[in-house]
Amino acid sequence: MTTPDQDFALKTIKNRDVHFVRFWFTDVLGRLKSFAVIPSELESAFEDGMGFDGNSVDGFGSPEEADMLACPDASTFQILPWRPVDNAVGRMFCDVRTTDGQPFEGDPRQVLRRVCERTAEAGYVLNVGPELEFFYFKGKDDPTPLDNGGYFDLTSLDHASDLRRDTILTLEKMGIPVEYSHHESAPSQHEIDLRYSDVMNMADNVMTYKLVVKEVAMKHGVHASFMPKPLEGVSGSGMHVHQSLFDLDGNNAFFDANDPDGYYLSSIAKSYMAGLLKYAPEFTLLANQTVNSYKRLGTEEDAPRYTAWARKNRSTLLRLPVVKPNRDVSCRIELRSPDPAANPYLLFAAMLAAGMKGIEDGLELPAPAELSDIEGCSKEELSARGIEALPTTLDEAIDRFEKSELMREVLGEHIHQFLVDEKRREWDSYRRSVSRWELDRYLEQL
Image (cartoon, rainbow, N blue to C red):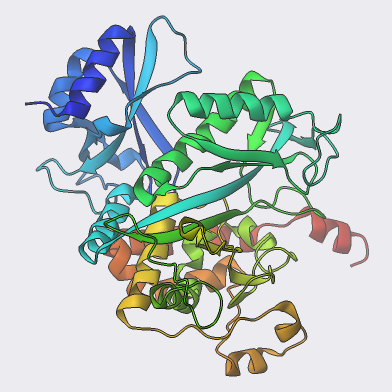
């Protein structure tokens, strides 16, 4: 028997002349994977899933255990607006299972679902609102910016206004609300912010968002990139994640109008923040998973360097946006380290688990650290105050991640070990490469 969501999907497919439905899922590194299914197969797919070769997906299978099932989540069904209206194409996100119907331990979506279920058992739901930044370039092999605009520019410099508009309209056609968009600080850098929602839905939305941005850019004859640091001398792209816990009655558990410190933060919020501060070095590999990520993290004024929090200091890991006393729903914290190359399922799972661990252990939030409090301090002085530097290279991040019992518990042994091995291969490849900078600096004079 089909569910209401499945009935809706099947009726929409019939009424909207849908001839193909794409099954979407991600590999462990967060790259979107897909295969198409004809409508006549959907009822069977809802019941038993559709088989595919997991050995072809990074972090999934082995030659001995290659067969897997993609089980579509009918609640995620949407028509793809950039495909033709006639012979339309739909999509659904899938959970990946083994051939005996069990959740596959290498499926990032299942990892996030497990953490969400444990959080719900504790009486909470996490809402998140990410700010994803990206660049437009003339082509995938030509990283020439389209403009020389700056932050919030709305002039002839901002040639991408039409691209952002079309992107937002496409997202809204797919049921993904957008709060606002603007030109960012670097040339040809842009930001479109999604309206907050529960963390599982948002992870799906982030994957959709990234594809929509690229599809719209391609239709306009340009290339969109979520590479964290594609250009020297200008800001890189981040994915700041605003977040707050709500109880099962819809109340913001982070808000306390009577906070003695004047921040409108509850004790739950403070322990959650303390958990993020404690475990951030261990999940930095998930927030910043590429060699290129560390050309932004810790090297730019607006990118975090320390496991500290503040209201205005943007070099800290956590920022506390201003909260209006009569707007408890707006009480939230902002995690500033992630970049848009992250796998949102794994990042959100690690982030939520770290915060909940802080609540479970009753961790105390240290004092805030504005820039004047930490500027010029040595590592020893910061350490004495409980402030740690975030990893500054992929190598450092791998080491912290590999030793983390919490990350192994959250992700499971399969994903944890795959990421350690895969990222060590990436780091070793980077170490062996010879860059243009080295040739320009040393070839002639040495």
